[in-house]
Length: 515
Image: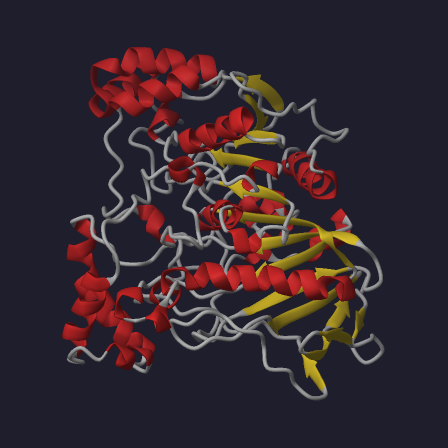
């Protein structure tokens, strides 16, 4: 049966900058590429210059350019869209089923650290199914990244104050746009949930720590994206060294303002050349927010702000995060003894105890999955949840996504949970498992929907999911059978941290095909 499309006979929507016209398709009004701010390079965002007449918003807007060319590979893991770039990328997309309602609003901040990605990069970021089945208004945001969004030029003049946080300032501007405009799209500006995965998760915790964002959102969902300084260590110094190196490489003398007009890809090429030696020595090179009196720093390093303590949130990760490559031993073919021998080569003499703790924490899983077991996001997620439980005034709910997929017997990898959270497994082939995916998607998306509406993820398709309490780390396991377990992997994570090889951020890895 054909799905309904409308354009001419739907109303235009009036925003603070002017009228826009999207389109209607299959129960949902869709608006793409709406400008929410504008800015010159390295400057803070400003309100959009109003336009005359009616602006069509039926095409996605430009996305922020990246430091290196993206490559279309690993599409079974995470199906992508590839889109034209522009540093003038402050635009957002809206999906809604009712222009006159007062629905909860969900605002998505994409992954890719602070240097890559876009609001439409993953096909599963599409908000139509979430809006129509969740009775929600969904917004996804593009903002400045890498050297455009996070390069500290403040040592070179007041003109560049807070340039190290321009990307986060864009996100605050997007939330201000939501506050001022979302009612015209059927949304409730007093019920806004921000959510994000990977770098997008850290963007959410970052926004919780920015006083200028206080009151612009009310809940958060943090997916595989909590920083305790392990993956994204706090850099030493400010932007003076890297900016001076850029000026020298580009032959610009000491004229910092010329960096504002260098073509982006020349700037990126120079940056890629001069930044690595500074980065590997622990020096500041940008590519992430800088704690100052505007941004208070990540909660696990700076503590929660008083306002952040009032924000309910869900936080979790997936079993295999960075395990995109093959395991070091075949789960399908290797005997338990062969698995143990291979694990000993990797983990050393602590392997027998590690296997015992693994079997206790993950009954039914193959010990070979220890090669994939994540600690980079699981441990900080546990810390963040407990910090909130012990010091906050709002509930926090924890989850772990541990599904194994019918693709090379791989356990959940970084981004594999996104289609379930967006109600979009139909858009990601590998997430479709007969007799499993539909039920699990209903359970996970039902929790997202319930949380967006009420701040509580409980619903009738899941076991009771209690909030984390001091000393009681309740975790919802999202798998073929969903269940809540308490402090179930504490000892496993302690030992894994002690005996596993250190994570090498700079190593060439199979997962660098993913954002």
